[in-house]
Image (tube, rainbow, N blue to C red; front, side, top):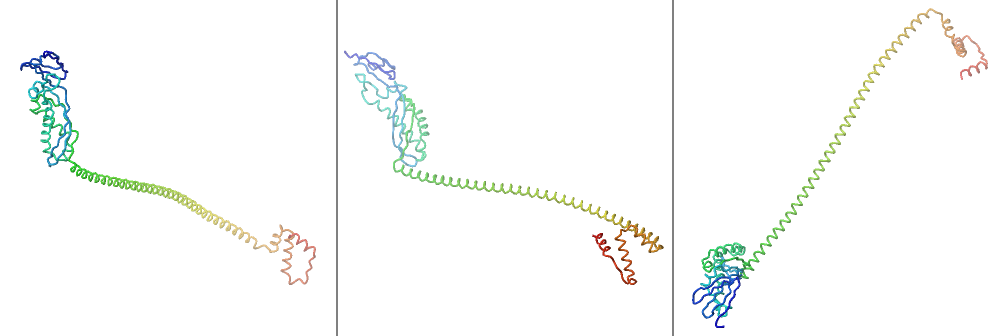
Length: 338
């Protein structure tokens, strides 16, 4: 009514009030009445803004790629920006009078694209595909030192690259190359696995051979121990045999000495008997044979006396014409003999 209006902005909006070309009021979250015919309102949003982007670039090896990402910024000098871009509200105080404020994100994207192209001029396609983090750091550094960003009163809060993609034909070629590389790596892995299996088999065989060698060594040690035990037993047996032989030799020597001594004794005894007999014979050489015979028959039994009588008869058989022997005498002699 009568051109008087009321405006109230959020704390994230910086409002500037101009009246008759002079700045009368400025600040965040203002609320006031104003006379619309003579007042211009400039509203600059201060909240952070996320701006997605996607653009094509060319690498150092002349390969086209597509870069997709997002940049986050905010306005830190609203008054300075309002002098470069038109953020003026219409008479209702609700909408901008033109689309000049929409050019700000595109300016930032263009600057990012220029900085990105400057970095990609030194990178090949393969290097670019793996250089997202490095590109982010260098582009952020370029934005921080950019005069355009400073003159616009902006602050870059963040930058991220979501994807870097080559064109479909190049992607297929890279996929084929990578596929071949992966197949080679798979073949190498299979070879390495087989080689490892062969090595494991060789190690197992070596362990088995070492085990067999160890067993053979143990068996040889056992055999040597057995042979040593047998040698010890035989040595003991030999010593025992030698001791027995020595004992037998000693015994035979003692037997020999005993036989020699016995022979000497027998010889001495025979000499003594011979001497006794010789003396006896010398003593009896002068005695009549009849007397000797009579002396010899003193201790004889009747049958021996009868036998001597028959012997004497036989000695004088030529002088005897006839001899009669009674049966009783013969019977008695036979009974005594039996």
